[in-house]
Length: 141
Image (cartoon, rainbow, N blue to C red; front, side, top):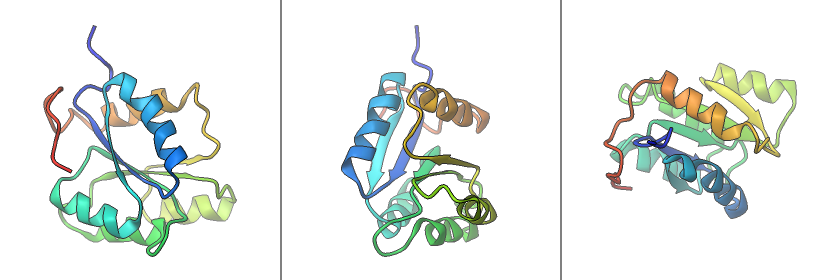
């Protein structure tokens, strides 16, 4: 039986290694290729070279924060339609409103609900269309 996420690539923009490992543990068994950037600047560089199917981004990052990185992504003609999900510990209503105003497609709070996280992300990936690469073929990072 094919994996539900085969062929999809997700970029996790997060500066805490444990959070990145959790996302990997939840998505890689579904066939999703998980790439990582530790800052907004690094994410923009990676995305410019090869856009993923979906970006998971924290709001609190070293240097450029998640809101600024999203703003820049949504301004770029090549990345304007890139789907972005905020994954943050900042759970205030104002944080959610700001993220959605900057173009976030969804807003998830930490700690993640590990029972539903992969299912929610897979649904967002499939809603965005077919994966940008063939299953089993790793894209450059």
